[in-house]
Amino acid sequence: MHAEYKVPGGKLVVIDLDVKDHMIEQARLSGDFFLEPPEALGLINQALQGLSVNSSAEEIAAHVSRTLPTNIDMFGLDSQAIGVVVRRALA
Image (cartoon, rainbow, N blue to C red):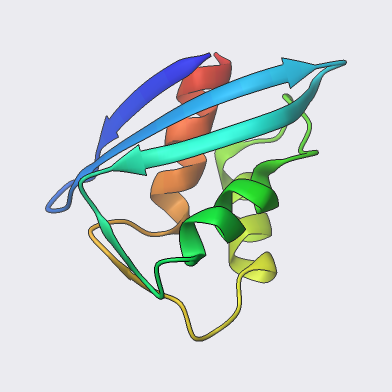
């Protein structure tokens, strides 16, 4: 599953998902945004694994926000954008 989302005033966010048994099995987030530290991308991908395909964009965003360490800086995207692009892929 694949989707793209242009964050208003931000950057392009792209997601590729593998789904099994109504759960996200693997997630690959990419785009023209920036993350600090760089390993934050892997943490976001891990946070999406195991989420139900029925999760709302708000639930996905809240889960990502809760899961990530507080020292991660996102430039050009936020957890809401991640929720939106994941829902688009799952639709």
